[in-house]
Image (cartoon, helix red, strand yellow):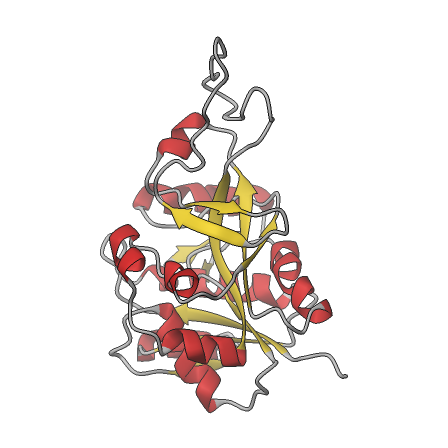
Length: 263
């Protein structure tokens, strides 16, 4: 059977509460969306890369640097819905693979994208996947902005939460050190979820067609909709720790990193 096509899709909206026009902000001479797009092009396993947006300003910039852009409805509530519209319109087979890449991670490592995609090329039954990285910092483990995930022995997600899961119940007399945040007996580290998703086309269309679930609305985590519906999500553990751009401080930090790299 031939290898499925793999398409990287970057949902990009202009509006942002803390950083209006975030995806178009300059980072060392290039707009953020171009930085993300170029990182995707460096991934070995992506056959195509496109930006899905409802904003003509974003579309004009993407077309300006030679990128592939698909316009979407402006009423979508999430990036998942935006990508599902595109996936339902362009020529793809049900088994083809779509990678949802966040538009505000200009330092995303291409190797991380490949690591998330690779299991889909060897396992036809795999329908949805994501990535996570170990947490070695107590403050981050307790931070509700850092989403945590617990997986089973085969790497399937058991639950995602903003709470510090798993809870480390310590043996009598043992004291949990402040850092690193690992269980002193088992050595286990909690995992931080990274919001990069991989889907088969048919899975993405099914997922986007579901109504928001109770746990999803409680935690504010869209991926819980899949678990509540009885489907599974494979989690690949990587060393990559994302540097997203959500605040002016994040933006300055990323600008400094690019300037230091001379890119």
